Image: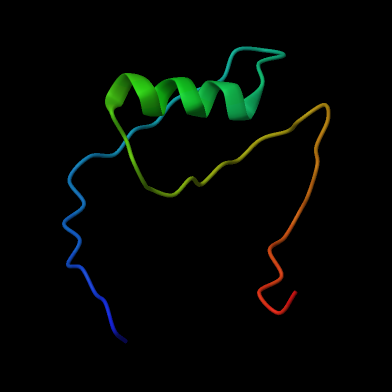
Length: 59
């Protein structure tokens, strides 16, 4: 490992989306409002439309 950074997680957010809200738009808005630059998301629920993608490091 050439670079490493010690992380000290200190803030956690929990919320609920409005019905018919766009997940990416809502997450982007929260990140801007709270000045979040990186993090992870865990979600539970249902969506009306979804697009699934993955990152291929070999390509």
